[in-house]
Image (cartoon, rainbow, N blue to C red; front, side):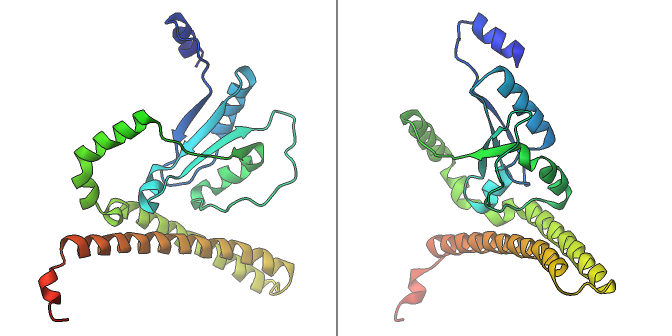
Length: 223
């Protein structure tokens, strides 16, 4: 980053870098431990500075942009009392990293705008790739991602089932401990609803395309 800033100024560009972005393919928009360290370092030496995270796989699967913008709390500053934030699906193998650093940063509000240049570029892209866009299937494009989601869901269910078994074995069937176990189960239910919703959306898209391009209107005569 230092070399980039120096070369930028040497070339006559005096604008400051105001942030960075990277992708989390398939595991949501949040900051890992390395991301937190990178963002904190840049906030220390150049402000304003923010981190943007994009999930391209979930974007393709859900049909909407999965994006997050974040800043870290300064070192030594304790974040204010935790407030309820929108739940997001985190794969089991990423949950530990997510939880360890979740209190070291906060999310920013996001709004989108489209410039006249953006409109021209999108028009050119649409004119070139409209056939591919219409013929592509989100269900087929995200089939490997779906398989991974179902495997992750299965692992989470086994983990929750194991915690219920331990509670029953030690005679902890009711009360606060049971409610504590039910919380992960509720998260698994939320994840399964997300998967089902994405699949239903993909099926509806395919059905609409079928009715538009494959339906023979002659078969409906007289009906």
